[in-house]
Every structure is written in structure tokens, then in C-alpha cells.
Length: 228
Length: 272
Image (tube, rainbow over all chains, first blue to last red; front, side, top):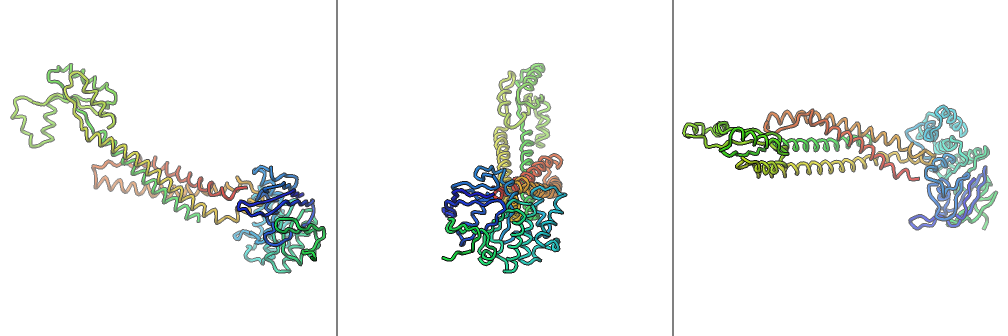
């Protein structure tokens, strides 16, 4: 599903974010991407979304070679991805339902399909009862659930979550991670960057650890940190 | 933010529209003055009436001539007496009329006066040609200056309006940065994202043009009446002659800057 082959990324400022990374994530996998700040986790997510291009190697997502993908095809790539942000990025002047529907409207989904799909996504994350509320009336955990609903409402092949629990209390963080697990159980590939060692250690999923732009560890049922 | 952008465009358009109206009126003044420049060709005294008519016909055929008319010496004396009241009784003191017969010629424009005068002088039977050389030269220079200055002022105002609008629309778009960012990340196409903003820019430009139209029409009508009352010698174009062209430019400018501002303002957010 996601294949990084000998990928390097040097930003125009000269900062080297990734060096010769090779990583293969199969369809339906749940992967934690861990590592200290600046290790290159966010850059990996940006490469997968084609927000950035690699300066070396190849990136392939769902059969698309992102290095040769024309700019006009980038929106079609992104429709196959759902993204969850640490800071939620909900539109403050729109209701919960409108925030979720936004992802469908702007991708020109048939208007007849929008209401039932929004309802399905909100029910999946347990937020259907708050559909008419504005984001400001929700707790952090609830806002992240809405953000997850917006990510899955387009029925993506992959969900990318960039520090989804970074702004949440332990209970809300646990609930979000459970929801991401549920999304994965339906066959969606999930890639999560996190610093939350407790959750990684409890869930025992595949863990890829980056350090200074290199893959230091790739374990199928890993812990946040191995005993060194 | 949208109201601020519309107001800014409206003010820029009013200034640009005012500049255009001033420019067309100055051009009109110059053309009125141009039309008043007259060339006089004095005829030899020994010409018969038929010969004078032939000279008149030749003068009318010259390129650049708008009209030509024969002025007999008696008519010339009458005009002299009328123009200078103190000479009203001069006719009774003179045994014969000393003035020559002449041909009065009007050229199509100030720029053509010199050529027409030279050609008139070449016609057999014409003894001497007079025209207001310094006046003509100044008029030619003034007309050219007014046209160049008008174009320069309009160009500078256009550039200023575009800059103001660009920055205001950039602020509007920056305020919706998150919305645009989410759109691009969920897979909206650039055309889909750009569409509403460009439409909004066009509507803002049109709304500003409407506001500028209302104010320009009201102010121009008022000023035209005021000037006609207090400075009757200044030829002011009537509203129906001056406004349509200026307003067409104002509307074109408003819609164009609204559209261009949105288009350019969006660009940095739509890089894939």
C-alpha cells in the first residue's frame, strides 16, 4: 500500500530530514511511527500526501508512483487518504456535521450521498448526537473524534494520523486510539505518528522508529522503546 | 474583510474614474480650442470673382481642410468695425476699403494647421497666409501633453488600484487559510478551490464598480452644472457623452482587479 524505497529528503534550507529510508506498509496494516522530535516522522507523512517530494529514492502509494505523478493527479491521490491532525483543524464557524460534510462537498461527492455518509462517520466515532454543535463547544477528545470522522467519511484507503493524541488527556487519547483500531479492523491501512509511549506499549502493533532521518527499528509487535 | 476589500476597490475606482473624466474633459477642451484656430489666406486684389471662386474651390480640396469660406472686403470691414467699436466710423473717413478679399479656412486639427497654411500659400491668387502660429504650436503641445498625462495618470491609478486590491484580497484569503489547507489535503482540485474565491473577487469588483458608478454619476452631474454656471467659457462634456466610456473602464477595471487579485492571491496556497 505504501512503499518508500531508498528515500532521502533535504529541504532547500539544507536540513536533511530523511536519509535512505526504505519502508513497506501493506494493505490493512496498523503502524506506529515513533521517534524524537525532528527525526523525520512528519516528513514521511508529507511525502505520502505529496505535500513534499523526495530528493532521492521513490515513494509509492496505492500503486501510484508519487515522483512521476503529475500535479493534476495529486487531488486524486489525496482522496484515497484520510488525515487526522494533532491540532484538529476544524472550521470554527461550521457545525460538526458541516465540518465532516466539508470533505465530501469539496471533493464533489454526489449531494444525495452526503447526509447518510456524514451520519455514518459521526456514528462510527460516537459523535452523531453533537452533529449540530460548533467545534468550540466540544472537548479536545470530541474535536479529535470529529476530525477522525472527517478523515474516514471519504472512505479512504489509508488514514494518516499526525500526533492524534498530542493534545488530549489520557482517557481521550485512549478512545481515539481505539477508534483508529476500529477503522483499521474494517480494512483501512493506518499510519500513526506518536510520542505516546503508554498507548504504543499497550497496543503492541508494528512500530517503526526513526532517528535523525533513518529507520532505527522496525518491529511487528513492538514497544515504544526497546530496552537498551 | 470582504467589506474592506470592496470599499478599497470602490475608492480606487472612483479615483481612476475621476482621473479618466478629467482627462477626457481636458482632451475635449483641447479639441474645442483646436477647432477655433483659423487660417486666413489674403487674395490678390486683381482677381475676378470667377478666379476667387476657383481659389476657394482649390482651398476646399486641400487635404486636412474642414471648411473654407470666402470673405469679401466689405464683410471684413464690417467685422473689423464690430470687433473694434472705436473704429465704427472709420468707413466714412475712407474713400476706398483698404482691406483685401480673403479665404477663411478651418483645419481638421491643430496638427494640420501648418500643412494646410503652406498648401494654401501655394495656390495661385493667394498673396499672403496668416494663422496664429504660436497659438497653434502651443495647442498642439497642450493637446499632446493632455493625452500623454491622461494616459500616465490612468495607468498609475490602475497600478495603484491593482496593488491595493491584491493586498486586500490576499488578507481575505489568508483569513481563510485553514479552509483552503483542508480543501487541498482532502483532495479538492485547484479549480474547485479557486472558483468561489475568483467569483467572490469578481462580485466584490462589481459591487465596488456599482458604488463608484453611483458616486461618479452624482458628482459629475453636480460639477457639470456648477462649472456651466460659474465658468461658462469652459466647455464641459455633457454627462451622457463623458460618463459611458469612463464607467465602462471603471466596470472593466473593477471586475478585472477583483478577478486578478483572487487569482494571484490564491496561487501560493495551491501549489501541489
